[in-house]
Image (cartoon, rainbow, N blue to C red; front, side, top):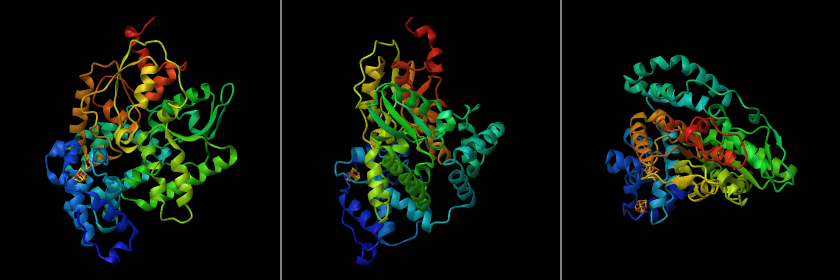
Length: 440
Ligand code: SF4
Ligand code: SF4
């Protein structure tokens, strides 16, 4: 694609990066077929190609964002299906990240939209605030229908719908500390505690720690770690996202100095995609660029790391698992085979639902901020999953777990919870509840 930026505009490193990305696009439109919003809404401006044109026009003309651009960029899930499909290697992720920053800097959103986003940015990344908010949401749940009657309040209705009825207790593993390897130590890793996940499903990191330590890997949960910054990054709040990234880089590199780290283990693929991008996000910071690149190189999804440990084949479990590949796993990190190979080795029969490339509609805060499109994508995803007639659903991202669980009665677990059980750990309650199907 031809571009027309001035030398002055290109002096801005963000514009220079976006210009290089834009020039790679050849308008072929292959990406439209796999874009969930184009497939759902059928509008070119809700396709990757349409958004690329909008972003190009806005940046080239040095214009502040307007309501039209904001509407179509806000509808983008950042699912990155388009980057998997694009034959020209267009780096849509960094282009849309730049567009979101530009929107945040130049556009004043309507009051209720601003308020909702401020509440989300001030709550979700902080586990104790998030826990309190969920407790309050339990009281507000009966009013969800009322909020959904008014367009401006729909996100509040969506929040109340998504909030779980009960919350698990805060886990011991959310406390900083070292979990020693059983037997001879074959590795040492840090685990990202996370923000929303330990509040909603603390069992995921507990299963990870149990499994890794049983396999001879020392796991450290470092003190001082914060949310990876993904939630605010996708809102275009770059200063807040970079502050979180810098803090985590310091914490993890201190751990590298202390005892060495083979990997930083991440159990939510949405966070993994962002941490693997720290090197890019902090590339313009002379103090942190190199350090952030080191951290990104150490970041591993838990299944990616487990795949290096050569786990033995286990007996068949008599359970069929539909594997839902989170967008951040398959498109963001290009991890497609490892989770399924591990589940098969662990003795599960694994099914791939149709249209596996399409997002479930969770996408960070998308299911709150765009509840209508999100609900359509969820219904489509659940239909495809249920068509495989699974006993269980497995996935590797807390956002997808929360989203899909509100649309189906089939139990949904994190892949690592199933692996932990298969290799000698606790049986998840959801599996105990399927007792009639279990082998004796
Ligand atoms: S990131 Fe997803 S929703 Fe956004 S343009 Fe690409 S495919 Fe479409
Ligand atoms: S597939 Fe790639 S090159 Fe083709 S229109 Fe989409 S982004 Fe541009």
